[in-house]
Image (cartoon, rainbow over the protein chains, first blue to last red):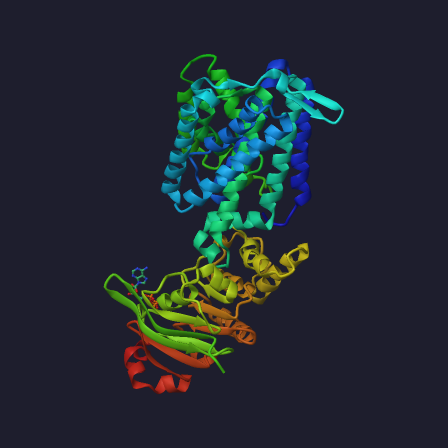
Length: 320
Length: 241
Ligand SMILES: Nc1ncnc2c1ncn2[C@@H]1O[C@H](COP(=O)(O)OP(=O)(O)OP(=O)(O)O)[C@@H](O)[C@H]1O
Ligand SMILES: [Mg+2]
């Protein structure tokens, strides 16, 4: 936000990326696979954080943007036979377009109404996926055929079903989105978004068209979430309607709350933490969703700023 | 000379209450105009209509020759109407620096250069005597300093018309002297519309004074004329210090 210590902030983020890179070579198989998945989903959380953390708009429908990327990429491989880069781009484009339309409609409302409207749109999106089961596979979902999941770049080709390739692709996407997020929140645009969160009326009286700025944030957020969905389809080879369900709208909220809203690294931390909590508890009980709920309640009661938000408040004021 | 700002029959009611009631008003460029009147006279409502924060029930607002009645507030700000809030409305969780950076970065014509925001912010903070507190969260500033921060944000918009709604409320006497100097300085490049209860400040600064009462203009004139006006004394000055 403020113009102090950019070097520190960039060093920290590059350090995290370097650490994730090194982990690829030391982690046992199981955790290696899990972390690849977590990085892709952390991108989803970062996209959510862009809107919820920085602009203060609580959406309960972000599963539709993730699913738009997921189906946009997956179905263009399955039905149109597109290659990996084209399918990835298609997924992102679907999410961006959807976010633009949803933003134009939903931003007429604020607060609770915004939550309800986004949730309704996501529900419509979910039902559409089920309705067009012929193309989408309905509630069974569809598998993206293995032979199509090869990224050809010039002479080199990368098999996305290979765990190491998959990990590195996930890390690449994660790193790009992390650095883009950092750049955005440190920019003048980022300052305006935070101002809207803090006091929209006042921001207008400083000459800002807050509607356009919020619309930009919805599109950016939706696009990032769609990138996560598209990567998920291509890296893990499955598109399914459960990713469009309300659960996947609430999960990114939970990840962000846990890690710390309006912090650049909070989404990764929250996703990581939650994933391992679920991973561990689901070994003991099938009621892991109950644990998710309890976690949410405890969080709101005792640590509303999340892990990184609390650290920033107490010790490291410079954290972006 | 044509007026910078004119209103014709400007009205706004809240339920049955006519907070602003058929106001015809004109403001010349370069003027310092004070608006006075008892509590609830409609002063804040009037300037809120001018700035676009609220919509009129009827009437018309002309700024620099153009009808701005239906323009949204942010467009009016861009055209040069800056409003500082009576009820302090700084961004409490952001630093004083960031509070002022928001208006500075928007008015910057040379959008690229990195140092320009910093220079603009520090200039506005220095003019209001807040430079030493740039990195404090605005919410932790004293009330008087928050008032000054409001003024700094207004200044940073480089307005043609600066509306100040009771800016000296909560300022210490020493700060008020500096404030008077600051407004004089601002008035060299902008027209100032000043709502103020502190009569010495009004008498010292204003070229002309408009007196509001019950949503209407009761009187208008030079400070001397207003001081001598019997109706004004009855409605307002009689109760002033
Ligand atoms: N949003 C609102 N809703 C209902 N009534 C309002 C609203 N805003 C102002 N009023 C009423 O309109 C009248 C004029 O209020 P206004 O704030 O314009 O007065 P003022 O001259 O600025 O007073 P003060 O000197 O106390 O600031 C008051 O009776 C007030 O209660
Ligand atoms: Mg008032």
